[in-house]
Image (cartoon, rainbow, N blue to C red):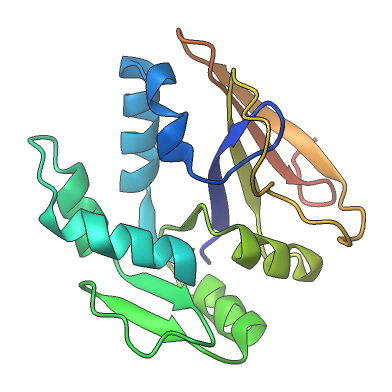
Length: 185
């Protein structure tokens, strides 16, 4: 059985929008290794349409010596969208309907983590169904001041339990949570 893992760049004030505008000054060797290891522990990506379109426009032309770009481009990608006509990025499949059932089916398959990057609207649609098994919030030491926040108003209270923390040299802290009822004691 696979687990769905959310990995999110987030500011101190909860903003997830446009991380390319505020994330990079806080990267260091530790955060790079963290993201590398995280990607290579995943067996597939689960993305919302907006994140997918941004990634699909950028990643196919990227290269690096470590193989990160090759991994991003090679992984199976599942895109949740009711409006996307096609998903042309390598190994991409659009999930248009029965989203909860399709993700439950993906979780039942043996394999590595199903990794969500960004995709705020998708995250907000999955939380009420308990489909996210781990929340990795990569908190950056910056107040952005405005923009889309991770969790939208109207979600029911969802208790989580802190299961891990990591701190990096430029002040980024990764807070890892699991649903409270599923977290190890």
